[in-house]
Image (cartoon, rainbow over all chains, first blue to last red; front, side):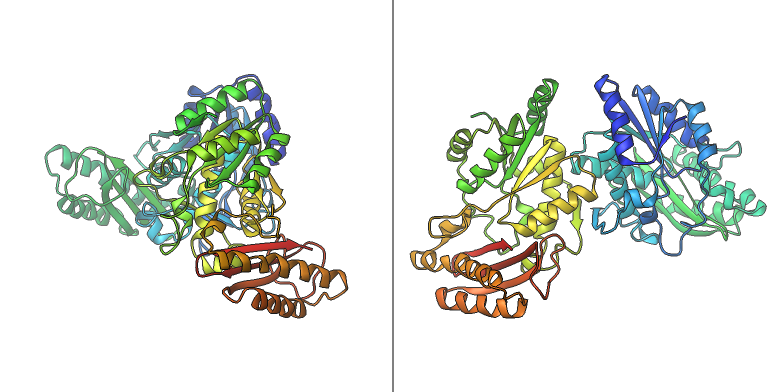
Length: 280
Length: 280
């Protein structure tokens, strides 16, 4: 599995593919790949001829007290996983390649970035929007795939891509879960055994909410109260960071759950903050 | 001279040229074209095969009390001028094409945008950076030409292009002046006869400063004082908005004038605010 480190190298490799009329698919990641990422790569391959995976732990999307330093990095293992999933090229730059001395331009998406994760992670989505717009300009993909697990990120990137007229098709991919329902995440490895057992509460709560909605309970207030009950019962170690019922495109709170309503939640365990969501 | 109004049309026209391996040159303008703009078009033509001129009075770069509404608009005349200068296609969208309902993404260049025009026109460079990055994504030019008259704008666009990895070569073009030295500007037409006569003070002051520097006076403080004297003497109707001696790339003030120092000034006349500059 070939990996390149510089913008010059990746541009050259992509120009070569484009000259052969190959459609470029793109999966931006921070590495520490799991089955969720691999599903994105496979989906990208379906939409393109040549799939680039970027592996870059982006410093600007971490808060000063977040886990930038300890975020897991293992390029060798990631490269092997990329290969099994059918990726064609890895772009793994060092931070200085992406943020050289004097870097000072940022992309800001307003409104969408205010609530949910944006509320407890100020600056996070500025970092995401900036690095993704840079990566799009470097890789110039025809299509890029993002996981639905980061629902707000997906909404922000859709908005940014539309607003800045980036000629990239954004594809959302379904959440991949562990056998017990826990949404896959590179941060799950931070969890203690006890936390890991309790972490299933997130998906369990969302499944319960979905059943409630199907049975006709559509008032957000009622569904929220039931969600909180399940979370508190099954995850006593977790602290609810947010629990929102919003429109899946605008991320604005809805009072009554309808089509394309996003139920999103974040729970802080002592060792990791986990998010999960469901669109009903 | 062909003009298109929609993003779809311009993309189609450009894809056609790119499929013939034509290099795309780009000159973004707000219309009300004068000889200065035409020099940009001619320069773009030297660097490319197919020159697109955008004509778009960009609302987001005007302050609430500025001249957005009265800014001169005359597409027919502009189109004729574009033709004489060798442009190949005009992109003249309506505001809703560029800023559709729900638009909420902005590009911000920090530091460079704080002083000079940025200080008296808050939000101006956010509007400029946002619309230029959008236009670059729409037109996908190989090279784009900007006038040195808007020295800070040129520095901001260079920085943004580098920071966001936009694959566009930025070319700066020298200021084009009237016979008496006044830098050409679409806003010169706002001036009364008396103001127009006094407006020559800007270039006269800058020329004097250049002579001072050549004669060995390199202290910014001294040169500034002399500049102010000339401006006050020849342009009593004008109010100095700023007068800065800065590094041409970083726009940071310099105490001693050296290579690549930018002398930039803005003067507010009752009918128009004029800017001018010189790099010594």
